[in-house]
Image 1 (tube, rainbow, N blue to C red):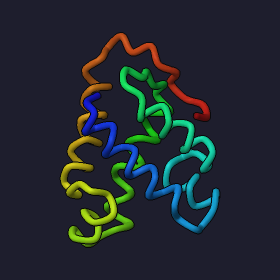
Image 2 (cartoon, rainbow, N blue to C red):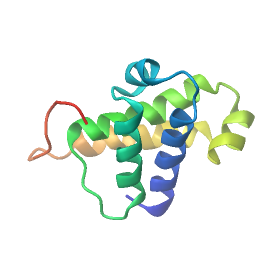
Image 3 (cartoon, one colour):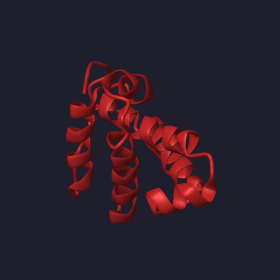
Length: 112
């Protein structure tokens, strides 16, 4: 993952962390509570981090749900610092990368 990709992921996770609606909506949006999302965000900020499959789901969910919650391109760019299309492209890249890795050894399920 490049530094720019890490930044985009961290910004979308921070957007979710800054929402005032608590853990239940976070679990619906990301699949994990805020504490777990924060832990994954710290991990994503570090170069060469390795992720379990359930953590990659959180990254994917953050990337695709932030543009849904911020439907204006201008507001999304002002808040996240990237274009919505970049978030969708990175989310798609995560799925493609996992699909192209037949010997994936990440945890297939479980909580983050």
